[in-house]
Image (cartoon, rainbow, N blue to C red; front, side, top):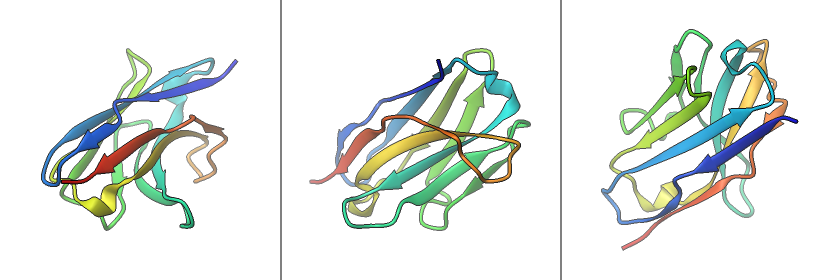
Length: 118
């Protein structure tokens, strides 16, 4: 079956860096647009970044210039490099897959927690 498995979350100090990974299986990864989302309790899920099948990326305003999304189709893996993090980046991060690149994400991972604190 389809699986998206995030890893790389943890605790980091403000100003630090973290790299999240998302390993995909059970579908033709290269045919899907991919996205990173985040959510904290009581808040609406927020899009962090997305990457098209050709590698073109888009970012949420709050992470532009700090986060970088990339994909390695040979490894069926999506990455999120998080630099200069701040406490507002604390959330559970999810990767998701969008067949057709219409902004409709049909497959989701279980998420990985990122906590930024001093």
